[in-house]
Length: 284
Image (cartoon, rainbow, N blue to C red):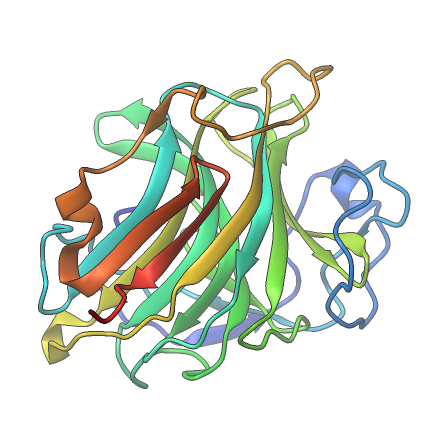
């Protein structure tokens, strides 16, 4: 999403305030990355569900201006797809890689899912979640993160230690009452990262993207090993309906092939649209 340049310090904060039903969950204890795929859907009523809060959540008001995707020497690159229709949520697995992010810059690489709605007059409501590596906090490290249009801050959840090669299961969905939740499968249980009451409604447009941004003040190309995304499923807006894989029969919006290859980055749809990779183009 579009973000405006502006450097601000990090602040240590407690877990983001959440609606009552989310706040009733126990705080997640320290745990290791999950060793198996989710065995049940994410939700406040799912057995074992907990909420992030075993450690401080770092918040950052750093924002980055969206540049044209065609920029090749620095700038913004947006690799992935969005839905042409509305859904009740999205889930999937995103691999963690080590990008060539430079410290003390606005550089970042992120693998994330997003739910959003255009409110008109240039206003957008959204919630995104995934992992990110940035130049302004913990350069050289990868972090679980969320970003939402209520707080307009990056929230880094460092109680979860990520390493290149890890695969993070992420779930975004609504409870049907205008509250949108971001979940992480960790310690073989669902961990609620944040729940936000957004002016989105009971359904939203969905995105799955790998984003790369190179600080234009120090123009350079950022190397990003291909990020693998798989098992991407969409939740129908009707609550009783089962999730389904994001396949080619789903109304899907993608950039043209030239835009998707800009700046030396390539998008490879292994199975449209639930299994794919994005990152550095193969050397030929």
